[in-house]
Image 1 (tube, rainbow, N blue to C red):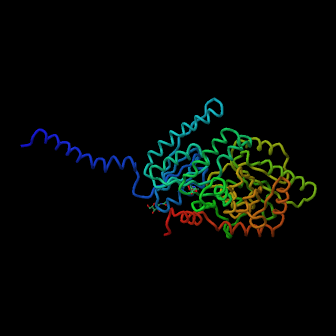
Image 2: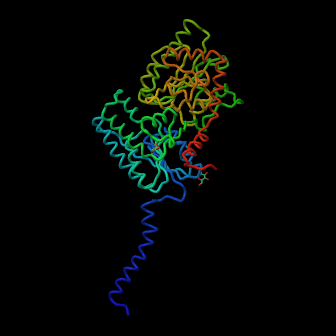
Image 3: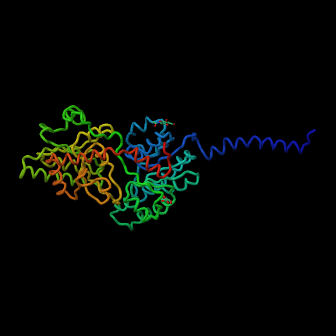
Length: 451
Ligand SMILES: *[C@@H]1O[C@H](CO)[C@@H](O)[C@H](O)[C@H]1NC(C)=O
Ligand SMILES: *[C@H]1O[C@H](CO)[C@@H](O)[C@H](O)[C@H]1NC(C)=O
């Protein structure tokens, strides 16, 4: 006989008995792990266009190759690189974009940040249970604070320092540190950076800066230099460059009549996003002086074919400048190439030109790497940290203004011996690839083990 009272207890027990597995196998895993699999999982976050974040793409591919499950979050504006789309271990999560409406700059910025917080919060919730979150900084706000709070789920945070967010903003606001937005940004960056588990920096100079100014622990910071990606390769010795120039569709129609590399004519290239920190005007100015030198002093100067690739806000202005001038010895073409054609163009050129100047003075331009990776010596606008990558008279030349760029061009284009020396330096640098430096930085931080 079961009494009334007992029956109640028995049903409670049965109910508890049934709920335990429900809790243990469904609810708790749901809350803690979401839909993760048994593989190691890393979330990559970039508040920028994934297609224009090569370094983050290399991270994604490197983790994937080691069998990690990679969740790649960012904006998808331009097309994604094929390698990322085709990789079964990488899932891309697009952050929705918001088109700005009318309103003051600060209000728009504020709105954007609020909307980003919701979008990122939702994504992070869906990806809960990840082992690592690797974020690119900058942009810092709002992703850095969110990423720090995300550590409560047991996820380790790696910050990859490409630059300092506040110094970029400072430049945007006319150089003043005391603009309220710059100050807020500085405080957020400095405060939350301390909560990262590990840090990566793009240069030694940046590491030193973080240690000194942000008080970070040097043992948990590894320098991971950007490296040219695998698609940037020097032209092999056996290739016939001359005939390639005449057949490759993306280049053959641009070369001027009677342009002949066998007679010493040269092709130079620069890529740019036409922003304020890259003054294409310096290059155009130098080429104008070159025209002048040709006319007045030296009829033997080689013809120059100059490609300027990329697009951006100031492009129209420079296109007009080029059209308004009567060029005799130089031809300048603006191109927008696919991710496949750009490396092919690079390896057919003689020299790369870099006009990049750094807002923090602590980062190195990716385009120099891609040029060196393609075996091109680089003529670069100088700033202190550039020494970590480019050495004057070894794998490139440096200049500070249009006159010096003009002199470098004459020096580099006329003298075959100089080219030989610099080319050798560039080829040595080209050997040094992303995979090996990635591996050693990740092992230094003990994120991956040797295998
Ligand atoms: C994806 O991960 C598996 C291991 O889970 C690995 O064997 C494979 O090489 C990875 N794929 C790519 C394209 O790296
Ligand atoms: C990044 O690493 C530091 C190392 O201590 C760690 O405390 C901080 O906590 C993260 N920040 C850095 C870079 O040091």
